Image (cartoon, rainbow, N blue to C red; front, side, top):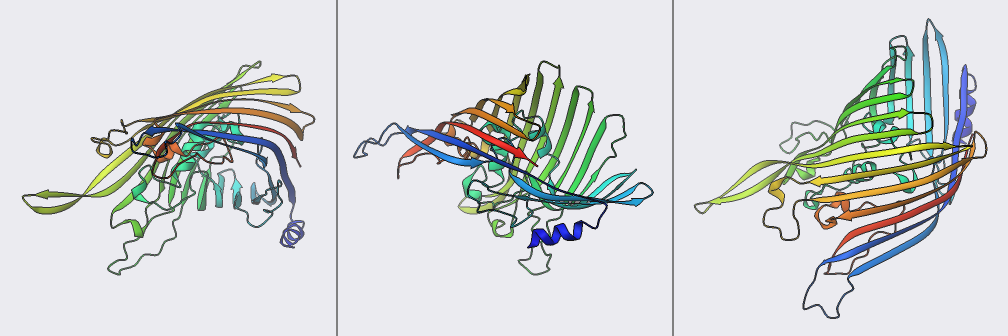
Amino acid sequence: MAALAVAGVASAQSSVTLFGVVDAAVSNYSTKSNLYAVDPFAIPLVPGSLKRSQTALSNSGYNSSRIGFRGTEDLGGGLAASFWLEAPISNDDGKTGIASFARRSTVSLSGGFGEVRLGRDYTATFWNDTVFDPFGTNGVGTNMINRVSAGLTKAHGVTSNNAADNDNYVRASNSIGYFLPPNLGGFYGQIQYALHENPKSNELDGSPSKKGRYVGGRFGYANGPLDVAAAYGVDTKDSLTDLTTTGKDRLKTFNLGVSYDFGPVKLFGELSQVKDSFNRNQSLTLMGVPFIYTQGLSDKYTGTLIGATVPVGPGLIRASYSQVKYKPDDALVPFNFYNDGSARASQFAVGYVHNLSKRTALYATLSRISIKNGQNNAGIMGVTTGGSPGYGTIANQLYAPKSATGYDIGIRHAF
């Protein structure tokens, strides 16, 4: 009923479009975790590795399944008002329909000055992660930079920080964005600010939290076969409940992406660094007197990606290699036998898309993830190839993720 009401109201405007994607695939995911510390007194003896696997009918293996409404009204004098409401759907089980417009919900005013856009939208820093990925951050081929960055919004690299979930990596709610006009000789860009909307107070314990705030920008140049862009953003994750032990938790992201279409092959590349900067209260005893002081720490996640697409008749071969290296603040790992201060996750993905028409395609993708020193960091430990069954564990034993494999074989129809 809500969808019909929106369509009925929108039909009176100058231009309205109903659009969507229905994507389904048969997918398989498998993981392996290895024992990295052995308890010599453990009875019975535990296995050296644990394996899990899962087969599922999934969605969004090639393009994200969605349904949306967008419209534009010409206001004259070069001005236009637009809206965009886009909802995720889970067509594999039908349980998620137009329950929310969480993918995008914006209203905007555009003209010769550019565009001002209000609402929930992609963040400026996410664009490079998806545009310069041959797999478009969909399905098991999704690049490692995306996988680790998405995990960092949900769990701090140090589990004791307990920073609450914040989804400002892909999209930001309550955002105000400005986009440059398209007539700048190939140059494009945007700046974005998302309000945290937390109340301020003069109460003794009313220190204002800025959790949910996002500030970022992206600028690039696209002309002919070349496209290059750089982006920087700061995502605030702190909350009032953390301030007794930690605070001022920020994810600071910088990335640079480039693609060049040679015709027979299109090459992609990206460099990325995410700094997880936060404060932690430390205790120190001097001459029998305890002192508590605040220490600023910063963990780094450095990512690289190279990829290519090769047109073959009505089809397209896709391939990529991506990697993220973790470097913790040195203060976090002194005298830790199992943590040498590093972790690394790398992934190779290859796939083929066969276009039956402009709107319908068959596709297949295979991906393999390898993890080094996975026990050293929660942000890397959780990376999988998709809707994974997770990594195996045994109570009171130390297992760390080692590898993950997945494939998608599916069909995509757009309308």
